[in-house]
Image (cartoon, rainbow, N blue to C red):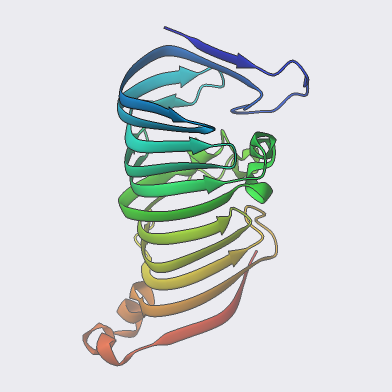
Length: 215
């Protein structure tokens, strides 16, 4: 089965998933408890899988979902791709569906993640500026804001190079790789403690990095 959505008012090219020109191939879906209440749609998504024409592929998707003209809410969420697995709850907030064409700056995220794995290769389909980053992180915690102004609370993040940290983080300027500024409040900075041989005194250590410029 296929699903096609095209808004003929626009003919601009968008690399990746274009929300004005969507084509879902090999679409399989099991949806229960579908309900329409004025401009709001409720649904229990038991399983969705598809390949979008851009190449982005969802292998498994389940959630209790709610859609309105200005937000999408996904509770009890589980998403699997070949490189990522996302668990938790996430809401996308926007003024108009066209905001997804400028996903990085205009679509706000309000989320609570359980232990998840995220690949930048999947994000590239929505934010082409991330192309070539080729990084994977494991994480849990709360994340809010737009991609270029993210705030995280009670985060637990592990990177592919085995470094990790726990704490709160505010990131401005993503995904620009030059002149990004990080505000980190860290309860534990695992890599630093290991190198400093301070891990046995971790309960006494509180590191606060006000500004870190990444180049």
